[in-house]
Length: 152
Image 1 (tube, one colour):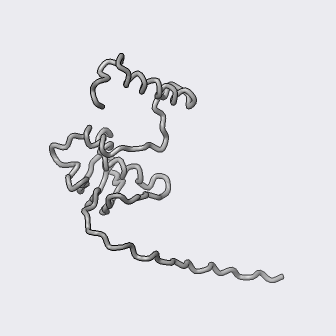
Image 2 (tube, one colour):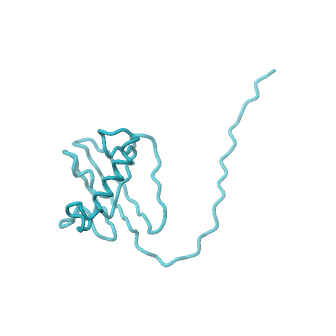
Image 3 (spheres, helix red, strand yellow):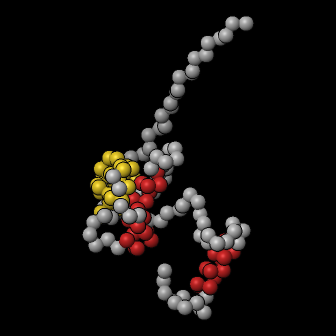
């Protein structure tokens, strides 16, 4: 029986109906010509993008392509890595987060990260970490915990 040549079917894209026009609002996150370096190695190059308010934005790509590095630039978590450098601008609510006078602690409270591998208590197993976290939270919010009246 002769082999039948297979030809891939063409990709068909059906556009969605246009969304109703809404008044233009500035991007919540506006990244302009962002370059990021680990020492002399350029990890991110010429990233310019906006993230609109109240919409879900996903970063999808293979391992090692810079997704987490980019996300860490949004709350300056890369600042704690020696030898790193950022060029370009990252504006959040129209304020340059790499500008002078930015309180990094307050920034990180507003722009959180959910890490790929969570390990809040490295000395505990995966079974006891959640209970340790719950008991720590309970103690931190109880009246007997020192400083419990302060807001986090």
